[in-house]
Image (cartoon, rainbow, N blue to C red; front, side):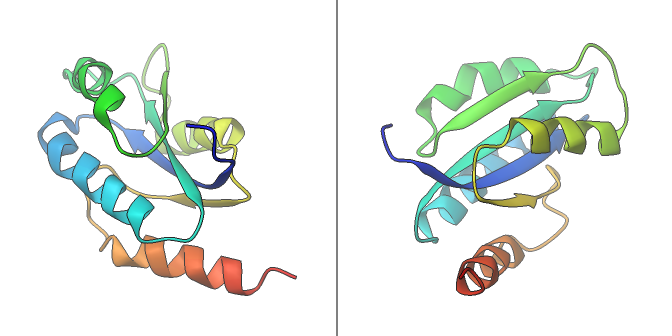
Length: 119
């Protein structure tokens, strides 16, 4: 994809294999609902399940650009988020839990609020 990344969505992943199919659909929906080009940055935080393998097998078909970062072991969510923020290329960055505990509309609204405040 040649579009400039304007938005980044950082998603720390730890024991979230069961949520990944729905998570990918939600990420694509968020990307389609914003003005600009969004990337998703998945950070595997030493997850003992097959989350990394699942993402490796499915991210190529994702409708938004993606990055996959795998940490060598579990460092905790704060470190995973920090690593994701460092990898993010967008002007606007949000963090979302992989288990979808927050409504995805919060991310879309957050991105719109950030863009509206840009000078």
